[in-house]
Length: 178
Image (tube, rainbow, N blue to C red; front, top):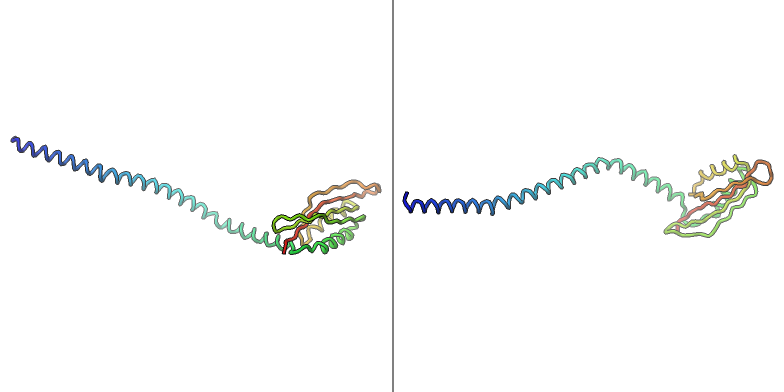
């Protein structure tokens, strides 16, 4: 071989190696890195898509719960009047107690406290009667159109020795400010 042909082959070999190196460094490696990043993003998106899919499956159940809670809140709001209107409640309470045959009735409202839109009025109740009548009184309270929270009930035997009990209860009623 001639020296010129050898030189040409070396130059050609160097050029081919340089082109291959340029291709690897400037084309293959950046595209390979970009492909790995895209694969990682694809995995993240598939995971998010799966999570969203599972959430979508629970959507009908959540919608049903929201409807139920909305109805319950509406009923609750209807049972908490605007303004005090507690005189009417206290009269109804005393009337129910008398109707159940309870004696020595005491119905006394306490000092109001406010929490946001709601105002709480404690109502202290004391009466005397047979257990069955006291039980019927509490059952009648469930039928009131107003929310009544029973906080504490204490029953002790009366000193009449006739089987009657003295019942003391601390209850709360609520109203909304106008």
